[in-house]
Length: 213
Image 1 (cartoon, rainbow, N blue to C red):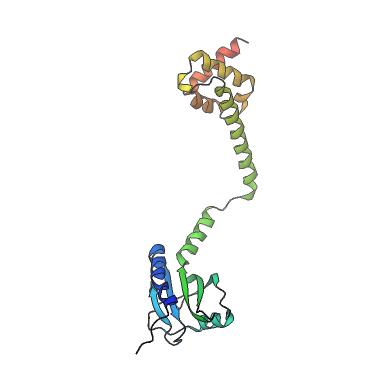
Image 2: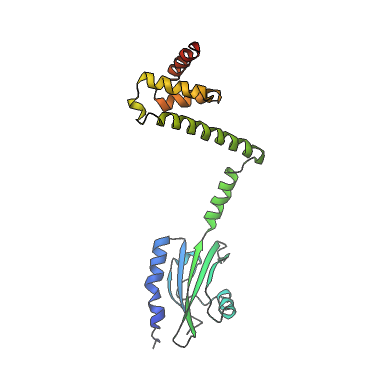
């Protein structure tokens, strides 16, 4: 006659299933009952991750972890390889009875092999020339300065750009010209976009402003 499962372990089975369903086929979740170390697995979901099933014997690695953590300290995010050679990220949480004795555990084994490969590809794609990083930072600073100058000048009129008259836009361009904005590379196109006019209109405004000086 099979010994009934301890309720503290039994309640873990739907939780284990929920974790496996949530994180998908790369996530194996196993519930162990230590009352029968030869056949400790009482529930397993996505067993293909490690190639195990309900008939699989307790592995030597788990036995070592149990011995190492006799006080039942849970082990989070440790790494290892499955018998299939896949890279795993694992967590083991122990279950105790009323007397504080360890009666089982729940193990989560997440196959991160494909993620490691993807990370390596992304690292390669994102590799930067360290000598160019400072120059890129300077470009970003210039863009921020340009944005602040244009926004603060337009904001003085207190209305959306679409409602500004031609004279008001000319006044904005004059203010920006006085501040030296158009000495910044790309300022013509930026101001044209901000004022919702063509770059040639900005040139015309500037010609008129400069002729009047």
